Amino acid sequence: MRLEKPSWVDKLVAEETARQELTAVLNAKGDVQHFTLGDALKCSQKSWVFRAKINGEDAVIKRFFDGDAPQTIRRLKDELDFLERSFDDIRYQANRCLYAWPQDGIAALSFAPGNRLGDQIAQASGEERRQLVKQSAEWLRRYCSFRQRDSRFGPAFWVKKVTSVKTDRIASPQDRLLLDRLLASIRGQVEGVRGVPVVQAATHGDFVGINAHYHQGTIYGVDIQGESWLAVAKDVARFLVWLQIHAPSPVGGHRYGISLEFIDPFLESGVLNVNEYETTLPFLIGEQLYGRFVEGYEHEDLRDKTRAAIEMYLER
Image (cartoon, rainbow, N blue to C red):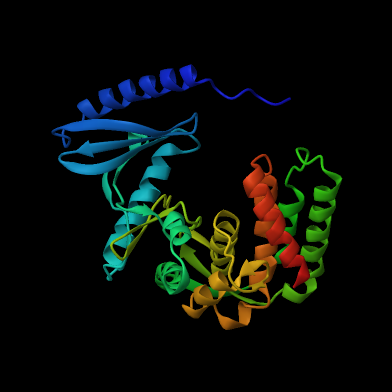
């Protein structure tokens, strides 16, 4: 049974309730001399996100409710403080943690200026677009360089993850067949990737075009929740698949379902070890395509673009 989406009235009431509660909390903080709350960017049962100005600085206020909220805030602060110390190039930055109140599940982060990175790439073309993609990869490469380790790849976890995705919403026989073909391709790669060398790193964890901003030559990573260890190839695959289905390139050919205009400059950055180009990368691109197709299926535009990427992936 599909749950009805909240009405606009319900959303307004929820946002006003959240605004009042945040105002009460911030009024009680001795280190906050003055503040104003702006628009609500998100207001759900799991978290609230508001634009704000705190002590004269543009900010984003986040309040978490899901899981261990105090620990989420502590991890978020530790990671953003680490990045503030570690990113030593003005072109590669992350938003800063201005204030953290773990007991309240609240953090105030610096506001990242500019456009979303994905929009910036979509609006560009030619060499400018290529350089933006390469700079995006360089941001990720730098992040991953701080803490990494060599390991061996275990594909069973990812196959289990793919097969656990609920596909009930996909009624089209053609689309179900497409997913079956994609799953068969992923399973067919298992023996070739089991135990291969893989580089793992503490990295963003969800580095896609909506989780970074671009402003006057600088990329700012945002929505970083804490220290997140995973295969570097996972974040590479995630970024490339997201870009392919949100801003597909009309230029040139493709590799693993990804436009050469994206995958070539991204890999030229050195973000991924060369020996993973034909092992973990195509395997994880397949995993990402499967999940994105199901997740965005109700949105016709995303469905069509993801379907096209899967067809190209299966041609490889």
